[in-house]
Image 1 (tube, rainbow, N blue to C red):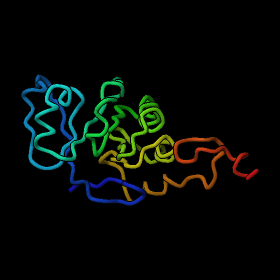
Image 2 (cartoon, rainbow, N blue to C red):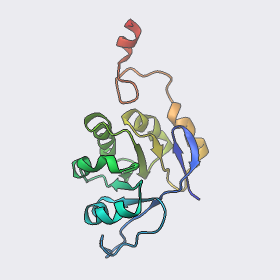
Image 3 (tube, rainbow, N blue to C red):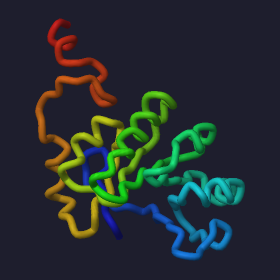
Length: 169
């Protein structure tokens, strides 16, 4: 069973990440039993079917997809995945901030795709609380990436007050 980092611990990932392959359409994708995380296109095309079979569905957004597409459906999701197709593509950080700050989403936000240890601290600051690292990376060693710095200066999702305000208090 694959593993992820969730809330600062390595845990088994029981959720299946589904993808559309090549010529596959949202309608032709087979939905397996168990907890799933479907691409946005599948959610938009088969929302009623997914809700009728799963009480904790997940959806994932690709880096070019807007969070506004699911803004009205957030209460249905146990997890929202944000895909990083390349580690240099930073659009997912903004997606997590929008989910936490603008839409007040309190469920799991999981980084998927080309996720590396060096990114984890910054992803956590933007609102990610789960991380599916690349398969070729050591997930146990990556845990240290969550605590690279002992103090932060700027405000973020994980610390809403900047350091100068915390020191003054």
